[in-house]
Image (cartoon, rainbow, N blue to C red; front, top):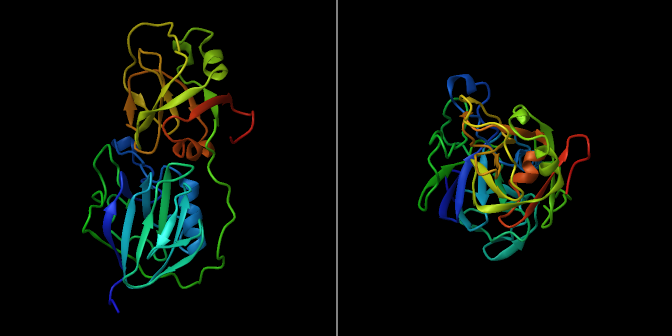
Length: 294
């Protein structure tokens, strides 16, 4: 038996990072929050395992991860509907599962959603940077991006045992995703019909999307002013519009400042829905107060 508890990274897939709830209160110093792109899925995985809800886990984009256990541990996978196997045997989604010492866990490409969260009882115990174990891919801050051959330590198991075997949660949609938006703060930089355009059409998620933001393709949002703004603070969910008129929806690793006008901001509760949209899916923006969900 192994004397340590850790995850041995075999393969990472398109992108795997360590994420927790991010770095709060440091934007004034030029440090973004980062953290899980789909916070609800991270919290769910940790609750299932009896961890603090902000314990660090692996965020896996479009599957492809394989890890081998050093020491047995309880695990769960939430978020995108990726097929999960342990030594070739399938296990359930959002199910608390024992990963024996030396066993391999694999995530396949998701049938719905984009980002999966592999949480382990005790959390991923890599060193924290500025009070967080999140990897900020834009600022290159936090733990290094895992690579094949890395060994990620697992922290001590909490004193209280897991209370639930499996969570019955809805799968991310494969259809149109509805996101609630608060107009502003720079809606006055656009022609009066621009908000009608934003709320009246749909926007496709392009392949030029990552943890920083989602570049969208759809009806152009016409400006009423020339030039650019001075740098202003940015938040997750901001819909920033460059001169092309095609908006970018900022996600977890967004820049802390920007010079393009922001026509609206997606509500915090809906950012996880956006983070699970695959390239090619369509987003529909609705005025906040019109109801959540897809």
